[in-house]
Length: 394
Image 1 (cartoon, rainbow, N blue to C red):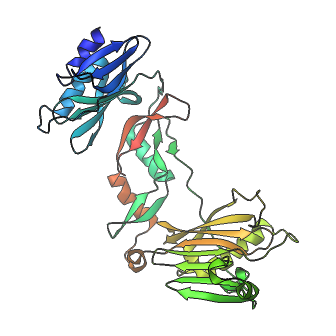
Image 2: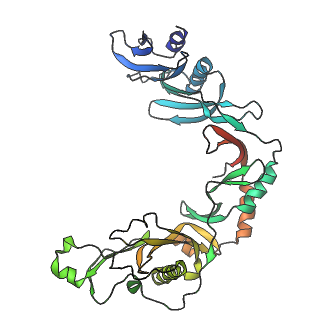
Image 3: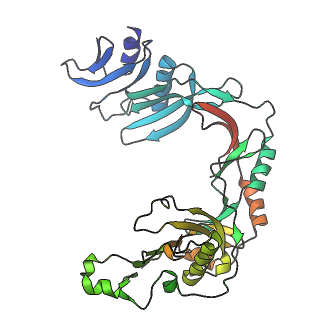
């Protein structure tokens, strides 16, 4: 069998390939099994995994051996697209290239694990059929860069303790026709209306004179109605209102009583969320922007927890969103009370920064650093790929 002869040259000499009907086993001379070789209906290799101890000494270059393996079992594969190193082996991924642009096709190729001793210990072949969606009129790369810069929001990010500007991660690249490709559409940020009447956070969560703050230590506050405190051990009390604060986040949760006498409008609920944000945030309210809202996914399940609307806010400096500093506020649709609130704290480095530049200047700087290259990108439809200018600057 040709497959057995071809595969044997990549395996340790003591390994024999035993054919039992349609099953190929990797065996030692003593009859011990070290793996199974998978083949398709044509007898072509699909993959294998050799499980045995191998010598520690190095013998041969992994990339060269992987390319020799590919030439033997999948000659259409020619492009090394990934190398992952571990303690005693290297996994190398190779892909087919298209005939026109000579670019790797991610869904067609093979992965080869090469042990330091020079033997191939595992392989998996992906002989997938695919459709490549090309475009006869491919825009120039400089035009693609300008499209990306014009349509992609920028954010302030904290990396290694330093502030930097970056294009939003949702922008992957630019289609061949010039439209920007997003993983998801970045939220449209809008100003928050000024709070006409300041309210304390406790009343917005339904805390009344009947509640007792029975725990207040290490950044944690727990509240419950006095009647509950009088009739149950503390360790069995439900957290009707809980507040937890640390250097990274502010967290509020509430399960105070409610009924269905009234249903608030979305705008009324939004105002409740803004009032609460104003009452608890450490930052000026004008730095926060409204980033969207949605009905909570479990809102249709009406049990002891009240259905809620979720309002999202993003914090900005000079109008530029600060990456990772967001607020999510859940407001009960019948009570108008805050049911949950999570607010990220602003890093000190961002708060202390006074040398920020405008978004226009930032985009000019990013434009000088932005790099794009053509690549085949998978579409939602299985095994379909589209030609895209993808970012390589992340």
